[in-house]
Image (cartoon, rainbow over all chains, first blue to last red; front, top):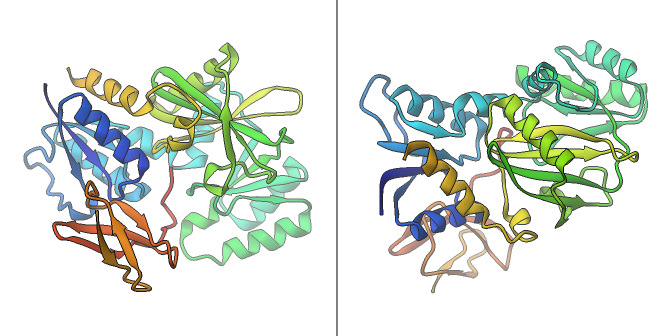
Length: 282
Length: 56
């Protein structure tokens, strides 16, 4: 039995959180669920968690404030707030990739509608338009021409919230009906899967089918480099291959879902994550 | 295993004995996502709608 107390921070217990709780139980680790919805944070008070917090909160906003609050009172967090903030914003991720030389499709970041249209022209068509915050492929669009780009970006500009003025415009990669998800734990690639779909968006949340994928040295290096660029942790790296087989990192997910990956690998992913978390404080 | 009426369609929703607070169940009749808000006795509520900043 470990003396460490692990707080699993989550407002929504999905298959992943249940698997993590079972892994903690199987290892005899003291643990509890901390629901951010119930938190009242008073800075400079005693630690909210006496141990380590595994941040699995589904809301980016809640995840980053909870992580910040926990860190302020000395709690070790996985992932930490800096990693959460970096991964939660595609513009910041693009900057981190560039700074660390991580291969990625050409990406332009704009702060206004006219600049976004200009960026689409610069990238060439088809171009991919992405909001900086969002997941599961939501509001990601492929625009075939300037007219469509103008219409779509005008629509975006009418959405409430200044965040919608920030746009990532990216090269569209003509991929072979699949992309790749790599789970990184610590600095180690643990498992990978293809996500196959007839739709150009190959998110598992949109119904892409998982299939086993060998972790080649090139894939492992790219995914590890991408994870390191945002600060490392427990991360899901999305990788795309073009029709020439060239690999590029698309984004890094700080609250990575892994039930689909678990269905195509023999590695016990939840236990690997728990082992990493315990290794940080033992 | 016990059953609780779906807050949306009133169909019986099976709640496993090992259900956890904050766990999400889906009503087989109406497909509503339901959140376990109590386990002793089991209680279900409509799960929160997906927010813009939700995700991985």
